[in-house]
Length: 388
Image 1 (cartoon, rainbow, N blue to C red):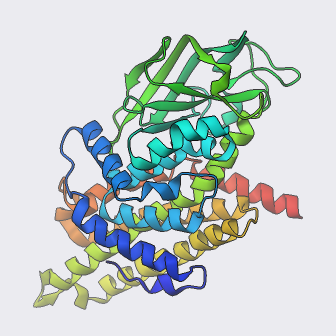
Image 2 (cartoon, rainbow, N blue to C red):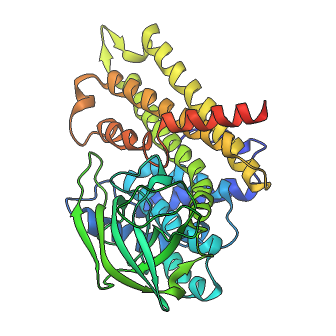
């Protein structure tokens, strides 16, 4: 396991350190180093294993321990980017049900998610509504005791393998809301729905391949009927539900970046100590030492911001600014750390399958999803100006 002195920081309780160490031991035995070409099958297997190991219960339920989620994501990311993805998407995909679902919805979906028997997905982004979530156009029209969904979603993680999708659609309760196809106005009048895979009118329009393979797809809804009982929360409250869900898991994205960065530093240290060069080893050179020192400092700075935000959220505080700072700093910093590790590896660092090469592909998406770095900057500035 990487340097664990940070587990003694006052942000944590003894149970958090025990959780991280137990998961590290479990992942060393249970998480494969290679996942093969069938990413869908590998992801399903990881979800089942995480459920059987009892780890998914930490991502599901009305009470969320943010520090536990962050430590789990950091630990899994250090072992496997796909294992981190499998854990995170179970939490994000079912988060709206945990936070705002009815007792019946929670009873029907959450136990299966926690056991790894059902795969969840969070369907918010659209072709023309990514960072600007309030611009979404997918519509849900009330029809008796049903809603009829029409529209598309894209960049949906677990798309194609999920058993159910939490879908956000415009229902038009807000004044000035307009039908699908007309210009949309703001974040009001959006509702959240649970759509089971196989529901008539719902299809996987396209599978999307990305540089760090994981299940990703574009979804299409064509006169897709779902019962009103599948709506999560009150009509028109979907945007609030989405933001509450993202608030829980945005800090954990920073934690995943920490896991990638710590693994990169471990690999760089091992390479620097063993790579023979000019009668010594790479670690003997001051340029290498300076790079390693900067990598370690960048990681600790990001970790302090990440676990401050997680600790504050667990205390019930608003962490909009702190989570944005953590997400921005950790993901941007991890990109720098991993790039430095590749440089230390030299030519071997760009060989497919070498850990630092895999990490280089894994980290890139984290600077974009759940709010790109530029969006985090806007959030931080807005909070600062609000305070002023």
